[in-house]
Length: 491
Ligand code: NAP
Image (tube, rainbow, N blue to C red; front, side, top):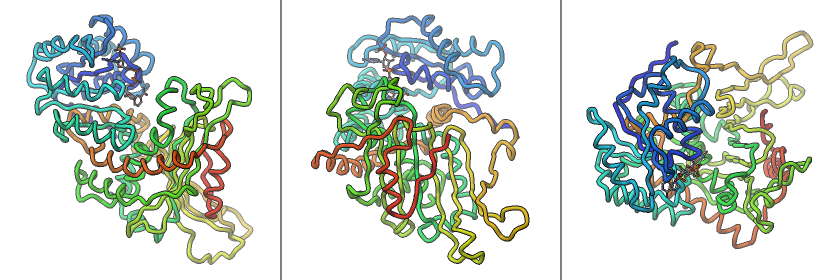
């Protein structure tokens, strides 16, 4: 099945922080892939903007090197495409906090030839600069009603700072112009989750507390906090992962069907989930910090952040409940951590056992598990119980039902575009469905803040866990005491 690529309208995308890590690793390679596939046409333009004193030729060289180093394999890219892509790239040296470069940027935007273009400004700089950028775009006449801004995470440090940032942005941009990005929402399987839930009759009738025993969400990383030590010691896993990425996954799993697949319809339903979250008692939370690796080659968390007193968590597991008709009684178990045994993200929907086994006690207990794997290999797996082949009576065995998309959809389905490719194209199309609305972000902080405040009030200290493990044993106990267990963190 050939994938259909519909070109987007011509656009100019200004990347503030165009020399930074995110721009080089993700944003620029994503744009290049969309160019190769013909979705971005050569009448569009990209403007890198940062303080570094570069000219356009030097920036183009940097972009070329970034694409060679970080560009994805796959798709179709003809010879000469790189040169044509680089022709669309420009650079302006600019200071978000000063006056340098702003007139040049405004001049370049006016000078670029061609018809009306969509104008988007990607804030790929540290969060302390988001407000400055919005204000300067306004002062220099670039915040017109057609402009769109893309705001990276973290969006605030708590409810107060998120509200203040929302207020600053709202002074210059309408909510319909603001794209708060969470790259998890751009992943193919996350969108497939909505297709599976809302385009099939099979799952939705079972999607409730009556049939689902519990849901597990795991986001495991192998890396430590190297390169982000200072930020991370002030954030921790709760702020860095749970408040945003995991909260978004939880919303998509738990929300009611929206009336339409339209931005506000989807975001209204997600908001209802966050508002229905119950407070989480201390006994249902486990926080951890990784220890030095066995061979001593990788430092422990406290050495990493150079803070022997640090009480910040690099791992968190928690059990939560959603207070509504659909989910009353079904727990959601979330866990995320650094320096775990493998890099994997998955959602496991664990259905209840059959109410009565006609095969007797010796057949054991079995349940269906729907697993949505977000990384490393995006896909969906359904565990079903069948008879073990061969003579010797009715022995039951759990096997995965093969749902490999590439077999059903052809070899093109093997190439899964990076989340940033989809999300940037959605910005250009003006589709906010996969971006967080201001009230969603605030509601997520409103749920998160009291939990974090409570740790401070009772001077909670995270427990230690081994590097390369599945996390602290206390996290295993969190489920064991409910008669359940975490799924293996898959390799
Ligand atoms: P980074 O590597 O430190 O890059 C920061 C960029 O901002 C550089 O291009 C820097 O260039 C520019 N910059 C700094 N101060 C500036 C100023 N006063 N005026 C104009 N430009 C300025 O950071 P990053 O990792 O790319 O992260 C960028 C944003 O994305 C952050 O908000 C981060 O939290 C978020 N994010 C990053 C990742 C990731 O994987 N890297 C993932 C998720 C979210 P000059 O020094 O030349 O000015």
